[in-house]
Image (cartoon, rainbow, N blue to C red; front, side, top):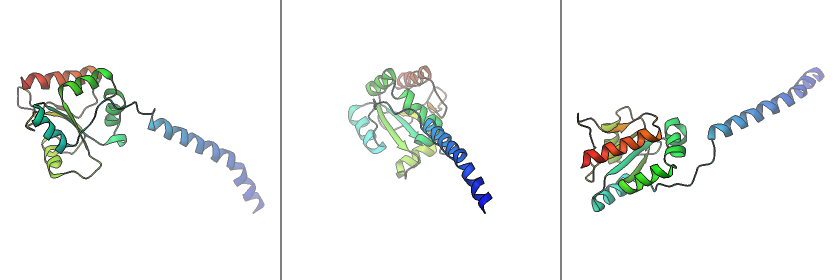
Length: 163
């Protein structure tokens, strides 16, 4: 029994070091603190109403949050970029649907049209809530990790299709 306690006590520094490393890794996974929000997100219901009233299109982001690498990247990098935020706020009504929460019937129906697998997706709606499509009738949308230039390009393409 004494030998066993001695071995356990001998493992204590190792266990403490492993715990500290795991804690540090978890903190790194969480990332740096979020920058101040530059985009005021609306619900689909409120954003749709505002889009109709103002005659503006909607940028809609179906996202999972911190559990999704793409979503977290958009949140911490793209949506906090002053140029992107300015383009979103000037040209679109920004709408966000949290996929990790219960969805309304309208949110679920729209998600099924854009992403039948119910993955995170960025898309555009016209002022009447119709999905903005390209020349081939495909939604202007992305489930991919985009860089700044790509996101700005998607926004430009959506606006051009609405002219």
